[in-house]
Length: 220
Image 1 (cartoon, rainbow, N blue to C red):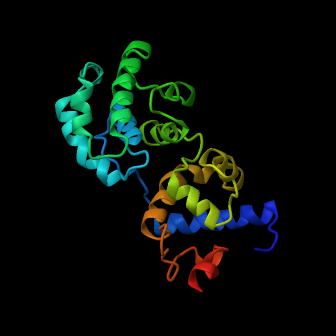
Image 2 (image 1 turned 30 degrees about the horizontal axis):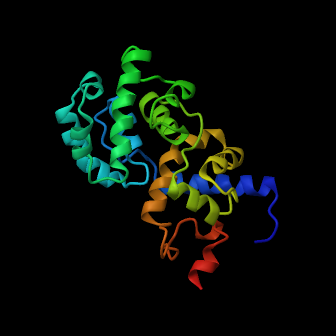
């Protein structure tokens, strides 16, 4: 790809955001959380390195068994492990889920914190999870959650060359207008699942094809 100035990249990013708003106008998380911020925290934490579909299969039984934060805080870890056994890293996620519930009860009066600093203190919650919780549960936008889909798309679109998701986010925040961050949290994930998939991306008919420097490579 020829050299692209910061100004030109921002203009291209603005066009990308506009198109995504047209093709994915009302994006939202695909995780089921029943409108409960705590259940959203747990669901997003469980989704790390696992599909949302897999998480949605285990959370109904999890909440039927432990309907409140206090119930989960007092849970038998072996039983939680059994419930979420089908998802990746279930043992560590079971431990984090219980400890997360305990911390919310003990340190935050049973209320999920609504700021990045406190959310990141919770076991199993990193910046990506905190971004999603703030966005969905509290309508607060402090960044763009970079999961495997967003990381892949950011590099295919040449919006970042950073080596890690953590370092990719600042590149996206500098490139996209802040008004677009909220929708992009979900649009980029959905676009990665539906179109710009890891293997054999659906470049033919892709709405971003003309703005994608990798398009010619994948369609050769």
